[in-house]
Length: 159
Ligand code: SF4
Image 1: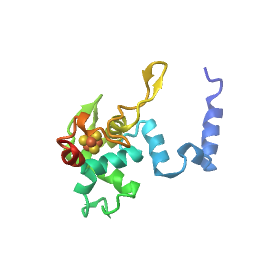
Image 2: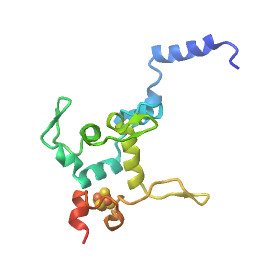
Image 3: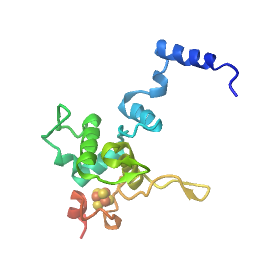
Image 4: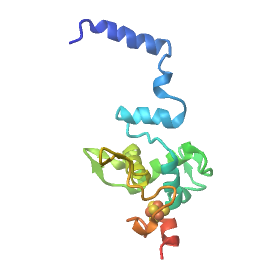
């Protein structure tokens, strides 16, 4: 039990006042979005190499090329902000499911987790896989991928 919660309030208030919270957010968009998603703000999606590769290989990013999303013309696959916007808009336009009351359309941070798991390498610890499925990684295994018929790259490489 906390003895005097006013001390905790003061401690947090001081950190906010002195802007002493930047190390919590980390540097850059990805770190900030990881933090926000970790506290339940699933409208933010931390974009890393897995999401970038997936969105470009599947053709989702290209679908939005030249279109405007929230004031930005989508034209740069090296811009993480644009990749995130494409994922958000794709979720809004095409995804209708929900998990535990969270609509995927409004929560691309959850969609991002599916993508990450599909792409990230397997990693074993104590006999358990604590990584991803390793399907759409550095060397994509399109022949084993359930998305191959819907995916731009999958349609072109799968024989
Ligand atoms: S078909 Fe290939 S490129 Fe497309 S999502 Fe699957 S593994 Fe990735």
